[in-house]
Structures are given as structure tokens and as C-alpha cells.
Amino acid sequence: MVTRTPAGQNTLWLDVAQGLVTLMIVGILGTVLKLLAEDYQAKRLRQAQQYEFRVDKYRRLVQITNKLHRISLLVLVDWYEDTLRRCLFDIVDAGAELQVIKHEIWVSRKVQDLPFPKPEPVTGRLERMYAYTDALAREFDQALSELHAADGENPAWARLKELPKSKDLLAVAGRKDVENTLNSRKDYLDNETEVLKLLTEAVFGQHLSSR
Image: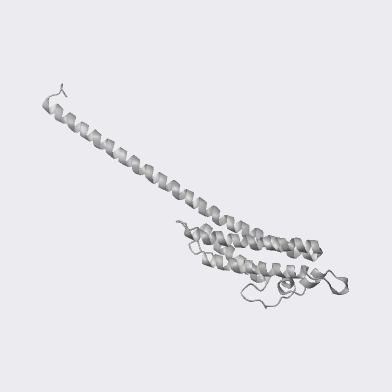
């Protein structure tokens, strides 16, 4: 500034002002871009967490149904009391796991970014499904408490063939005599299919056709 003429000093002041404005703009843009990047990363993290939450429920539900399917096959080839008792424990475990899944989905409605914007269609069906497993477990428990059977047959096995949900599980025609629960394994599988459909829609964010 000392070595410049008055006109040169004015020009220099103008250059300094322009440089300061440029620095301010760059600083502001840098801050905005940093905030946008952090917000984007946070959204990606939440989306990944939501995806994993939904897929976890899908996988566990499939495992539960596979366990029930194995029971229906196992008791047909090994219907002794020890096997039936293990099957009873597996049925109780399946029902307990269904209740846990339902509880996790229901509680998730309190978070800011809902993994399931409308959890009621899912939780309502899950309630009916574990009501079915509870009723099935009661039948197995009732059968295992039997002391006698005709013609020397295993008493628990003989009783299971008479109880409605157990008969249905063993591919014998069942009776619709229990209210407020599912009446057959087919009803259970229909509900499971609908729950899996709802979970898949939530995972991929799009509606699936009923075909």
C-alpha cells in the first residue's frame, strides 16, 4: 500500500475485497457441502438399519415356519413320547419367537423413522399365528398327559390324532371349533404368506401384486 499510488491503492483494496468475498463463498459452500454429506450419510445409515431390521423379521419368520413343517414330518415317522415332547418344546419356542417378532415390530413405531409405517397389518396377523402355536402346544401337552390308549398304542399319539389342530398338522381333516385363533395349518401358512408379503413391501418400498 505504501508503494502504490492512490489509484493503485484503490485497485489493491478492491482486489483484497474480492479475495475476501471469494474466501467467504468458498467457506460457506464448503460448510454446506459438509453438512449435506453428513446428512446423506446419516440417511443412508438409517436406511441400512431399517433394511436389516425388516430382513431380520423375514428370515426369522421363515425359520419358524420351517420348524413347524419339520415337526409335522417328524411325528409321522417317530411318534414316541420323547419325540412328541421335543416337538412340544419346539412349538412353544416357535410361539415365543413369533411373540418377540411382533413385539419388536410394535415397539419400532416409537422411533423417528418407522421401519414399518403401518405395523398393525403385520402385528395383527402375527398375533393370530402365535395364538395358533399356543393352541397347538396345548394340544400336544394334553396328549402327553394321557395315560392309556386302546390296543397298546402310544397314548399321546392316539390322543393327538383326535385333537383338531394336531389332526390338521398331521394332514388329517381338522375341525373349526376354536375361536379367536387360526383353525388350521393352512390358515397359518396363509397368514405367514401375507406377513412375508408385507415385510417384502416394506423392505423394497413398493406394493406387490396379489398374483
